[in-house]
Length: 81
Image (tube, rainbow, N blue to C red; front, side):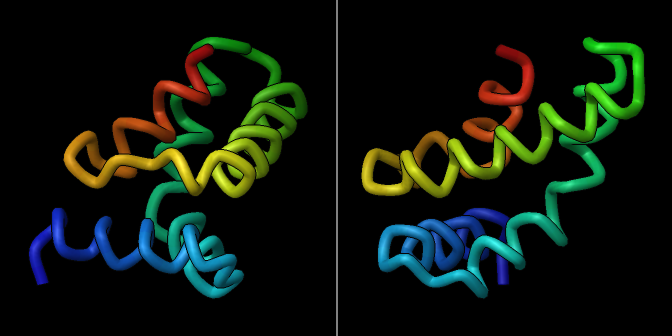
């Protein structure tokens, strides 16, 4: 499965409130999100909070996700902001 197809599957799941898709997104992109948050925030506890809030935002914003943009890109934008 290509990255785009995998992201599309995750997005479809998130848009249908599938918690397994959120867990899979975390398993796939959680480390990358934490690395970015650590670079931006510095302190690891703050970075962990940012990652948690970012995944919650991803869950809440699922209906607006656009597969063409890619899940990774969308999540990294949330983390960075």
